[in-house]
Amino acid sequence: MVKGGDDEFQWAVVGLALAGDVTQAEKFAVELDKGFPLNTMVQRYSLPTIRAAMALTRKDASHAVELLREMSLNELGTQCLLPVYERGWAYLMLHDGMRLQRSFKR
Image (cartoon, rainbow, N blue to C red):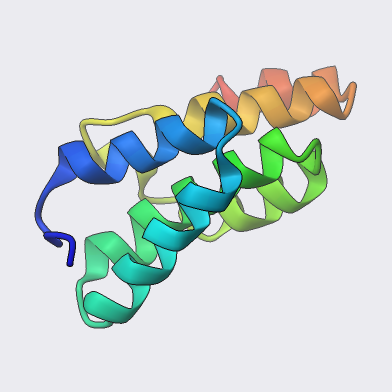
């Protein structure tokens, strides 16, 4: 079982997804989801970031943007800007320079 407060573990799962091991990342994401259904940071920050990384690896940029949309209002209040990076990457994949530019002007 994984530890809910272990940020290093959660970001390692993002790393797995971005490195192409989506299958293993999905297994860990399911464990996090089941193990910490009431942990706000896991449910509203870590899991969307992990799932967006999986979507980017699968070249599904539109889905990545959708996954990150819900958290966009709060992401700059955290120490990790990975969702901002992921959103930028997704907009690049979509060839949407205007939205990419706007996403970094907040």
